[in-house]
Length: 435
Image (tube, rainbow, N blue to C red; front, side, top):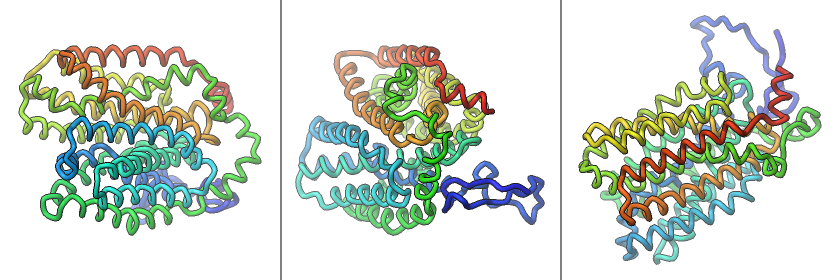
C-alpha cells in the first residue's frame, strides 16, 4: 500500500490509502476513478458552475418580455442596461477573481452565492427601471462571472493528472442549468408571475446551493495553501504579472474566447437569422435540443482528449466543429440545417470550454490560477457583451447571414493560427522533464 497527499481535503498532512485497482461488484466505488481521491471538490466545481445559470443569459432572457412590459422599456434601452451591467461586471471580476487564491473555499462560496442571491432579490423587488442595472450587474458578476470562475478554478487547481476530465465534469453544470432553469422559469412565470420566480431562485441558492457548497468545500484553501507556499515546486508557477508579459498568452487568448464570442452573437440574433433563412420559430426551438445534446455528449469525451493531447494542442482542434457549423449556416438553407449547425456549435462549446479552462494551469501552474483565470474570465465576459452589439450593427447595415457567418469563420481561423505561435512556457518545459 502507498500513501498520497490529498489536496484540499482537510489538512496538508491528511493521507489516503491507495487500494488495488481490481474491483469486485461488492467494493465498486461510488465515484469515477479520476475523482476518487477528491470527489467532494470535483462536485463542488460542478454545483458552482450549475448555480451560475441563474446569472447566465439563457435564464435571464426568459424575463425579457415581462421586464420590458413592466417598466415600459424599448428593446434598445433594455439591451443597453444589460450590456452596461455585463461590461461593468467584467472589470470588477479582474480584482475579485483573485479572492479564489487568497480566501478559503468556504468563504469564496459564501461570497459568490450571497451576491448572486442579492441579484435575484433585487430584480424580484424592483419597482423602477433603474433597479434593473444593479440587479443585472449582480447577476452577471456573481453568476456568469464569479460562480463560473470559482468552479473552474477549483477543478483546475486541485486536480492534475486527470484535469481535463474533472473540468469536463464541472462543465456539465452548464447543460444541466440550460435544461432545467429556462424551462422551469418559463412554466412558472404564467402561473405565479415573474417576480416569484426570482424569489424561488433566492430560496434555492440560500437553502440548497450554499449549504451544499459549504459541505463540499471542506477546509480547502487553508492548510493546503500554507503548505504549498513552502514548496519550492511552486516557484515555477507564473504570477499574473508574468502571464501578462508572456507573448504566448495573447496568442492563445483569442482562440479561448472564440466560442463564447460566436455563440453569444449567434444565439442572441437567432430571430434575425431564422427570418433571413425562412425558418419558423418552432423549427428553431426544436433545434436547440440538438445544441444541448451536442454540448452534453461532447463533454463525455472532451476531458479525455485534453488529458491525452494537452489543452494547448486541443484548443484549435476543438474549434473545427464551429467552423463547420458556420459554413453550413452560410451556404445551406434547408430546414434541417438548424439542427445540424446548432449541434456542431454545442460540440465545439464542450471541446473549447474544457480545453480553455485546462489551458492556464497546464501552461502557468495553479498557485495563482484564480488571478490568471480572472483575466481570461473578464475577457470572456467582455466578448459576450461586445459580440451581440457587433453582429446587430452589421445586420442592421445590410449584412446577410452568409456575410456574417463567413466573417466569423475568418475570425476563428485567424485565432486558431495564432495558437501555433504561442510556444511553450518554462513551466511546461519543466513539467515535461519531470514526467
